[in-house]
Image 1 (cartoon, protein in one colour):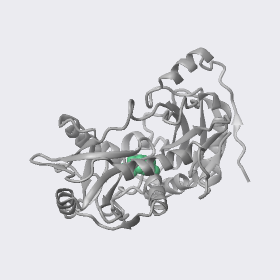
Image 2: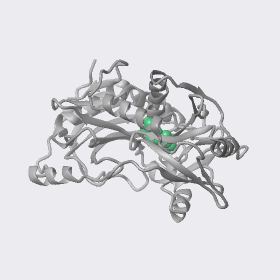
Image 3: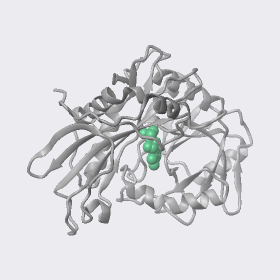
Image 4: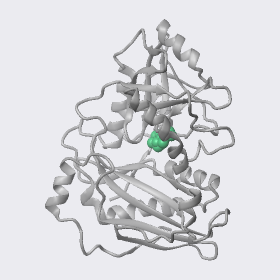
Length: 365
Ligand SMILES: Cc1ncc(COP(=O)(O)O)c(C=O)c1O
């Protein structure tokens, strides 16, 4: 049964011409639509009060536990406008499932698929004009959707909150890479770890990203756009980037990605790439891959491509891995042919330009 969201329309929506101007050059995460979805949870009343209401500042008690103990989780998913004007999203049930996994780890209440997907549909019904229209097949614009859940109870004791709020906000997004896709340089963090066994690495919680920012600053100081993390126990196994999963293409057609552990976030894009790779005649392998294997495979030509993947940037070729004392570059390859082929396949699916043979699309509007 779909949940009914009460609609409280904004009486101050952004004027059409201002919105159209924003949509011409939205950047990422800078502009927000006219509304947000909201559902409240309390220990006594469970989930209730489903609403779509005007976008605006939240009123939080200064004692709200999210502000002190970081009891918070979020998701990232996009809405794509197809050529006929309809609006779709990609595998939202995977995000809903991950949101529940994150909720369990952060001792937050679990939200059903109906409420998660229902909140996206209810918000998009109001704010569909904010979904940009791609000018061409290479125009990767979308509406980025950000569901999140916070512990809002005013209480300073350290225990799971008895009052929680779930929201969805939305922000128009331009293609992640302007003017074509260039391989990125990645910084290998040696001073900082992102996640440890038994910790929260597999959950999408704000604390993981707060903990990655010092490493991200180091990356930027070394002219690298992203940071890669090794495992915390042995400092040997490649895990993932601050916000993307990693893949390695081998000369013999194997496509290797680190196997999932409790220190790696399971990406929806990662999961989709593993499926699409088989269609491309590749042999996917989920297993541990060490930094030595990366270094040696890159030098010998055994590894021909490295790429990162995630909702925001889809698939990004990795040009080099930079450390304090070395630069690991691929001796062979450089054309990133396989990364680009899978990238195109994924985008064609998401924008409705190819047959949705896996049933991965859900219509929002
Ligand atoms: C740490 C981390 N790993 C991987 C991903 C990729 O996940 P997805 O493909 O679901 O966007 C993300 C982005 O959400 C992330 O933040």
